[in-house]
Structures are given as structure tokens and as C-alpha cells.
Image (cartoon, rainbow, N blue to C red):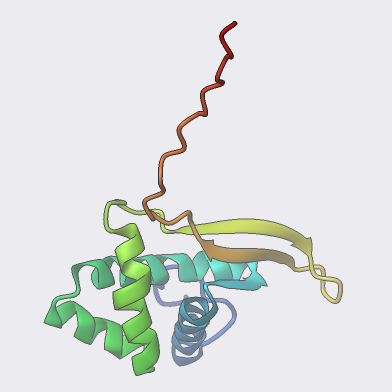
Length: 135
């Protein structure tokens, strides 16, 4: 009988699985979109969304928790100061998984993980009024 594990095991022991999820999170924060297998993506979504939620609050405790997962200081700065402010008014659901089809070598289902549309304020487009010439 195996021990109770939150999420999927991904055919790895605990340390390998944690390293994999941390690496996926770091790669996503670095490039803002990555392609991986569906199982790895689904396993990493909860970790990544929790990190974004902690980065939105950005108090000392939360930043230290983020540092325990992401060791690159540049990525932590990017997460707290660039990525998290995009989602300050959004209660959750920061990521989108887009199915890409199956990988050619082993037929594994592939997905693309990316951030959802950010909350960047856009200038409202006013319709142009047509000017009629008077006779």
C-alpha cells in the first residue's frame, strides 16, 4: 500500500516530483508560456496558482514561502512585481491549459500552459461618428 500523496505521483519519488514542479513553475515565470505533458501541467497548476496568490499579497512571510520554492531572485522579482499585479483584481484562475494534440514519439497528450488574459486597463474605443454634410 502506498502513502497518501496530494496530486499525482508522476512516476517519481517525492524529491524528484518536487524538483520537477519547481522547475515547471520557474520555466513558466521565466517565459510566461511552456509546453509540457498534460499530467505534468495538471499537477503543477495548483502550485503555480498558489505562488501567484502569495505574490499578490507580497508580505514578508509570503515572499519567504515563494523563496522556498523559486530560488532565482530575478524570477521572484518578476513574479512579485510584474506577473502578480496583473491579477490583483482576479480571485483565481490565473492559468490556461491549451491542448496541442499528442506527442509523436510516445503519443503523450501535450498542453501549453500560459497565463490568462491579464487585467491591463485598456483605453475604451469610442465609435467614430459619421459626419453628414449639410446641403
